[in-house]
Image (cartoon, rainbow, N blue to C red; front, side, top):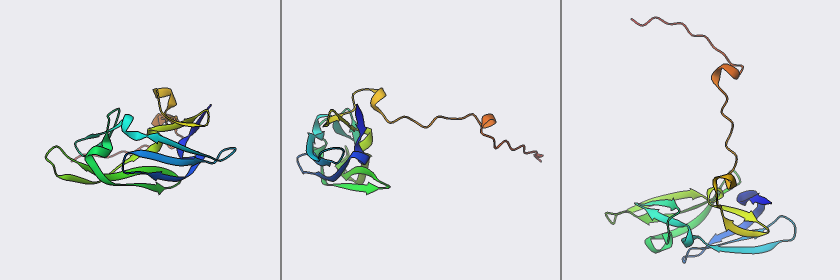
Length: 134
């Protein structure tokens, strides 16, 4: 069974070597860790899922939390050696908890379910607008 990252952990921290640590709060508490460098890279100043070694080309990494979701942010170098300040990525896009261990999402099926798109004509908010273009 997979658990979503953010609602299942607390005390999340990132080390300068790219290791993320968090405490599992579902069931018996357990300290978890994972090396994000294995699946997270730097693409011209932006975090890249599927890349490698993001921590070797950036600095000032920190964990931020908005609306109960955890994000990794930091300053990543761009190709022209200018620093892209405040790059950010949702940890829920990258990580999942499987069998009480912190792991990278493997396949598309591991991603959070997208909100179902409802066609406008089925939303119940049909609005007819008439206008003349002059």
